Length: 263
View (tube, rainbow, N blue to C red):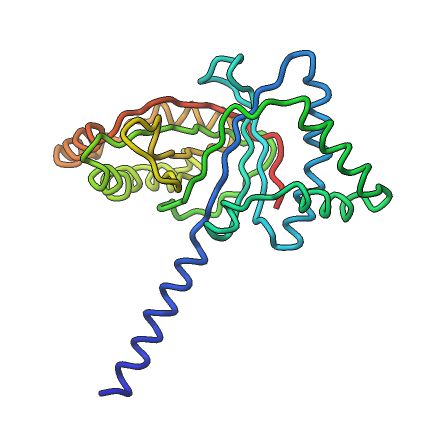
């Protein structure tokens, strides 16, 4: 009996460890740039891309995206969104500190001294305003092999679970809405979908509790997906969708275009 239990226990532990490794942790930064500083900010982006690449090569982070906002927010609030990917919640919360950025900057730009790198970093951050930062944990995603590249379109949907219906909302996303998105992906109407939960503690006054990311290859795929109507859905499925919609409040939708993805 012990010979049977031990392999089963090892199998369960391995499964848990693999699942933990698959979980992604993401930090969203919503960035505001004044019109007279746009050029300086673009220089900052290009400068930072190589630094983030060095951090990825050192396995400190798993990736970095730079998105340009198309719609969904007042331009005076923010115009860009960056996403930094981490392997675990601890490294996510620590983030990349100034000293680490300087270290990776010297690797990316070996002809710079440490002081020169720090001066460039200070200049870069002076041309932007961090309007908001969100720490998220990915808890569900579709099965696909979509590869993001410049021009990829994404819809970032901020959700707030109705008070007392937190678990009900997550269940609806996983069991009702995710299969719908998977069906669209299988039909070539979508690239990827994922559900993220706010990683930090929050209360009833929190603006949002979750975020869904809907990714499309381009505007053609995006508009085809908007026009698509599943005529095969049953009355039971439609009722489940309606119930799921009542478990959350869709706070805002941001449409953005990918300018660069560093991996």
